[in-house]
Amino acid sequence: MRYFITDDDQAVRSMLAHIIEDADLGIIAGEAEDGSQIDGDFLRLKQVDILLIDLLMPNRDGIETIRQLIGFEGRIVMISQIESKEMIAEAYSLGIEYYITKPINRLEVLSVLQKVQERILLQRSIEGIQRSLSVLQGGAAREPREQPFTEKTIQTPGKFLLTELGMIGESGSKDLLEMLDYLHRQEGMQTGVYKFPALKEIFLAVAQKKLGDQASGYELQKEVKAAEQRVRRAIYQALSHLASLGLTDYANPKFETYASTFFDFTEVRKRMRELENQIEPGPSSTKINTKKFMLVLYLEAKRLMG
Image 1 (tube, rainbow, N blue to C red):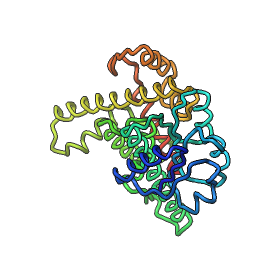
Image 2: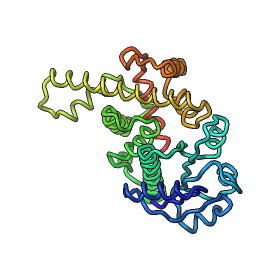
Image 3: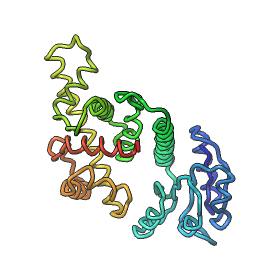
Image 4: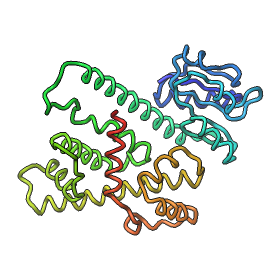
């Protein structure tokens, strides 16, 4: 990845560059001390993937600079000690990916940049799949039962969505990706209107694939129960992540996009109040609709595949 750092503080620029290079996240394509020194053409010429930009600078601030970045297709991470919700909301509305607060914290910077890199790589993978599908669809006619997808195709947008929801690191995410695979294969083999299967059926099919044909009924049921718990914990993490985003900034694009799509909004508001009051009830005492989450995840993953 190629990074460009725009900040009027030389010490901050040096610190960010050191963090990026020390963690082998990519190379520094350039630096600037003010937003007036960069534009979309300049960043394209530098082949910048990720722009880190300060909010407050003497001549042209970060928000005004972002407005002027016509044609720049890279990702933007804003950095500032300002914590005004209005200014942060405006920055998100202009398309920034994340907001890092000063003073610079190495772990926060690494976490944010790794997430941005994951999103870039997943998006590129999705675009590659879509291009391949376009070629296949425009080529010679295929046999009716032939599928243009590999086994992991549905997992690519699935991983993207789980990353967006802040749950990709949970063990239950692996179960969810396997469930996506199962659903996609089932729909590919079914004629007519696809009927979404029962949740127990999905868990059982994934358990059978994992344990093999020789597994006993007891072993299968034990794995199904364990998978249900893992998935529930992962979904609870996504709920907590979105609630945290909404609590910090109600206009956060991820919060607006995903909170009411994947969850009942009453549960999101309840979790926001719990976080605000520092209450940790845990996933077992929270109303989680696993089937709704799975259905939305599958439909959204299919939509991203084009």
